[in-house]
Length: 337
Image (cartoon, rainbow, N blue to C red):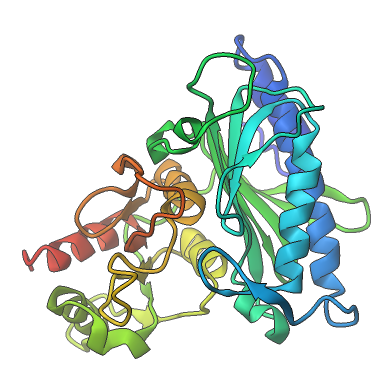
């Protein structure tokens, strides 16, 4: 089969559209505008060291976390770019307490966009890779009015597309529509994302585990024993620890090389009994990506994609990556190993 390496992301999306007779072009327009937003964010990230956009914005988001200036910029850019295209009925962002309605003067569409505008933003000031995570659903309510919380709170397996942009040594887009996972690298000279990683498949078992071990004493016994297993000199093949502290970055590395990223629940904060990561804007999109690449994502007790969400900013424990590594994690968490 002839490789498509070098194809622009627009060509790739249009090619997939032609292969779906029921496609209307609405989804293509949605993705194309999201790419424009990511290019704008990438430009600002790349000049963050010399522009007045580093540091805290002076307020806290719905997660009670300090919002950084670049967080605000990314969130505003995506909302502004995506509101007018006529393909969305609602949006939801990590940075907004409630769902985001499309302004009354713009037409409404049949899709819902859920996103984390700038994942890993605590690393902005130290020049570590950060990213934008997104998931797309079809609306399930009838009519052409605003979307509702019902349209937003859907299980992850109902996503029609998901992916992320990673802003690092290069800017990449990785996405899936349920027909394989593909990676595109932004070539600054021409301003286009070109296909650089075709049909990404995560190794069935990896050699990397990614977790913040400073929380070791707050984990359950099963999680502690799992990490001890990964670190044991008797474990063959041997694992190596790699933890960046930016979900997109850790996930991206493990997607390409194989391994497991873990953010278990812990006992540090009684307000967060289910961990830190958000189901809707972080766990679900990456779980969809890893599934289509041959991997797996779990809470330790059940698949992430099967969770029926109950609230917009719901948190979940997350074990994600190579299938056999995540299945092993489930055994330890459930006391079967």
